[in-house]
Amino acid sequence: MILDTNALSAVADNELAAVRIFSEAETIELPVIVLGEYRFGIAHSRRRDEYENWLEKLVAATRILSVDQDTARHYAHIRSELKKAGRPIPSNDLWIAALCRQHRLPLMSLDEHFEGVRNLKRIGW
Image (cartoon, rainbow, N blue to C red; front, side, top):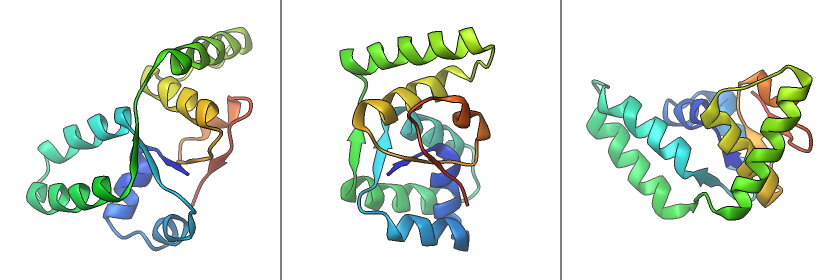
């Protein structure tokens, strides 16, 4: 399962429903895009040290998904599909969706706009 930034935040904050889904996942994958968004958020947090320590442990136990040429192809297809449908989504979320399709993994996220992406399963909590 791939985590979106809001899922990562929910698990870090011990939201019970999110932690349950997280703990039941066979694998946890983190897009480099999500790491950037999350690190930006914790850079401005009063609990910065706590979140950074937690994140380092998580990163050590998960696979980080980077963007490559195959991801770029998925990105272009998804962006075209959403443009035709008149349902654009934020750029970072396009990259996350592309990684989900590329790796054929579901996405844990509260963002309902992912529902408009074909061949992507969103897991909410």
